[in-house]
Amino acid sequence: MRFLGIILILLLLSGCYKIENKESNTELKQLYNSLIDELNKGDYKLVKYFSREGIVDTMYFDSVNWPQELKLFSELNISKSRLSDYHILTSQNGCEKQFYSKSDKNTIKRYEYLDCNNKLSVAVNLSKSSQLYAFSYYLELNNKGYLIEITSDVKMAYESDYRVEGKFITSEDKIN
Image 1 (tube, rainbow, N blue to C red):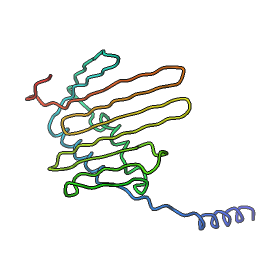
Image 2 (image 1 turned 45 degrees about the vertical axis):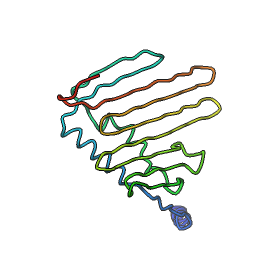
Image 3 (image 1 turned 30 degrees about the vertical axis):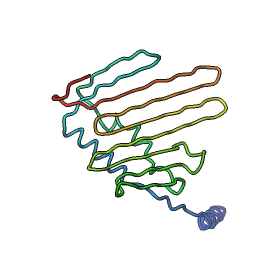
Image 4 (image 1 turned 120 degrees about the horizontal axis):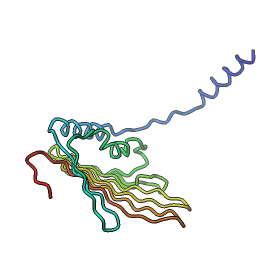
């Protein structure tokens, strides 16, 4: 009898629970997948430049797991947020979209992408903060590579600025 009472309460609560209609932007996820397919089919390699406090390290990769390499971008996909929390501007006949947060509570403050002439370009401003820390991220991605700039400040512990730049290269490309 107690089990039946619990089921009845759950049914009543579920009837009162409003499921939010979460708008999504599946177009951007498809664009990421298309870029990853292009990188896999084009036999691209990767050169990464890491810089921190004026010191630059360079690494070359002949074999790249592109979904893993670009995971940061796909994980920050604006479609994981409610699109109604953003002002959305569209230009260039719909191939450029800009999302601006309506609230300081959103982690992703600005997100824009272009898909003009099948050339994906993405830019993301992201920040997280509390009384103990502040992190600011700027990310860019296009068909030639990506850029990640991170500024972090953990109160009374450390401050750090660093940058990671990845260039997608083929055997015909010259490395700078």
